[in-house]
Length: 589
Image (cartoon, rainbow, N blue to C red; front, top):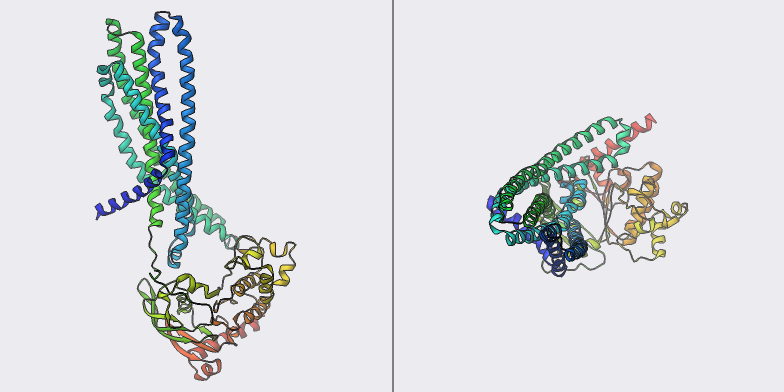
């Protein structure tokens, strides 16, 4: 099992590096720039030999004039190479990250409704922002450093072997030991990085939740409590990050010590050869300079490896989402549902969450244009029933038909085009009133938008804003009242002009005045549509053609308002309970 999981992770990383390889031409020129950097660095080290032997010992004036010019040219080429590789590799990295971020967001949008109920919004935001940024560092910075440092190591190794292969062999004896901390601490960095990213996601989710709920936080005087929760989360993140710092920081001193052993041996052995006359001072200083320069990119590789390990950990979290499969499957040969009035039929429908059935043996036939009200106690399964129609979820058993077409065989997009939804909580976007009404029908004319607003009794209050339909409504419509937001949602549903309408307790959170205006707007909305009304207040279902009562996931009663009252059953109990509560409220007032 572990072997399979490891292979799965490796396949993820192959996908990531495949994206890198697709930018082959830029990678090629980036590698050429890295080769220029490595060659100029190696040549600079080699120049120490003629500089010392020819200029300072033999006093060669020609070499004195030539070597500084060569040094300037080498440093110019080195700077040019640095710029080229940084630009090209960051171009590749940023492009890959854009594609990865786009793929992640596209896939999230395609995942079913159940996914969003299970995941925290802030955690998903963290994967798109924080985790993807960590991958960007790996792809652009780390790959650039990896190419440059590896080529520099190869170039400098060639220089020291060319100058004295015996001494070079003794100098690189410690290299295998130097690579040990790179590998070992890299593993630790990856483990800690995964914990850091999870803590960051948890922190993002916390921020999203508490900032959105500021009214409740302040109303209940919980500022101190939330501050302490925030401090606890940042303390946990701080400890994890410090573990990562320790793992990354320990690499350098260990490599410094090992490098010091190599340099000490070279000074002793090389100095002896200079004194004995078998080597020149220039060759000795050029050699030791090249060795010191060689240890520098080896140390950098440890930091590059840490960045790569952090990036791979972030890639795992991103691919956890990208590879998530939707349980709402599109049929290979989907049927396109045509516009028009529709019959909706439930046949022996069962549905549950986590194997606990919340709907049991639902049989229901709703005629085209019929208005069906759904009532029952909280948690009885009312919302679950209507959520099955647009395939937010799929039935566990049985089937739902639209005009004798099983919705699982229908095109999901054509199915959802036939359905408009107005929810209890008005859901609006931080955009203009015009764009919110036209959401789902972006090509609608301004006349159509205004007519929808008038039918939803929203036109008058919109005209009171200085920018009218171009007014920005703020985050979640914060500039509007509850009734105004709901009427914008009704205008949006009117403009979509879908033949099937779902009203999920659309007036339950409104005051009496707002409810009256929204009810008038709803009367315009439901005309000629097959309508499902989840009713919280019985006053909202007077125009229903039929009422069903759901209790513990079953339809226990069905009929008109008068028929159900005369039965003295569940509906009658609910109705009397609401009348009693309403009377008590009026008495208090």
